Amino acid sequence: MRLWKVSGILLAAGLFLYGGLTAALYWTMRQPLDRFGAVMRHVPGVAMAILPFEPIWMKVRAGALQPGSLAPDFDLPTVDHSRRVRISEEYRDRPVVLIFGSYT
Amino acid sequence: MLNALYDQYRDRVRFYIIYIKEAHPIDLWQMPSNERDKVLLHSPRTEGERFENAGQCVRRLGIRIPALIDGIEDSVEQAYTGWPERLYVIAPGGRITYKSGAGPFGFAPKEMEAHLCQLLAKGPRRASMGIDVCGLSGFPSLPHPAANTRPGTDAERPTT
Image (cartoon, rainbow over all chains, first blue to last red; front, side, top):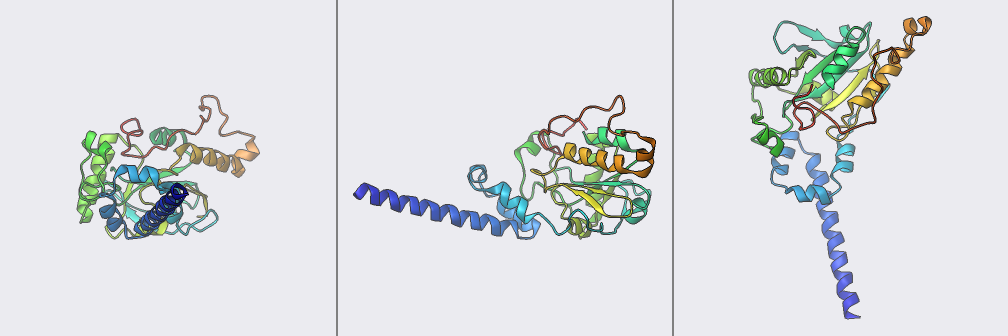
């Protein structure tokens, strides 16, 4: 009887801890990106394996644009500074593929 | 993979890399893989620093796709929720027809390619000519979806 009680308490404590850490992870992911990175540098890798990192990430980073949305226009310089590109001019007559990323 | 896509479709599709805020700068959330590969970059504080990082990326990875540099205020990244990496396909006229999941988990070049093939196949010129744009001889069969690749990951560096 006592074993069941202790087991129940430990399970409840474990679930409470898991839920709390998951909520903390969700909150962290919703912070400005620099703050998110500053927090995550201190999170051990094992935590990311145990907590539901991917599903929360995919939800938090879903964004407002969807297929069917009009692509927001922008005007940006090329890496070699040779010209500027306005995306609305680019997609007037051809499909455009955008690849967002960085070196790191 | 991305260079190969560019080479395959660049006569019909415009490709642009939008270089954005660093995913894993050394002053924030550094990755062991970056340390191994000696990709040790700080978060840029100025546009000039971002241009430098982007230039390094393009040169070292041999990227042929034209790269555009987002402003230091990250306005384009915010509009498209592009961080840390993401793919979009925009049809002629400006409607988004494909949006990948957020990277790294959702960054799927092969999935994007399949969608692009369908989009090109629907084009009026191709349809009237009866050409299967994705079935031309020499076009590699779409492989089973594999691990995500992005500039800077173990999977992507340096085989672009």
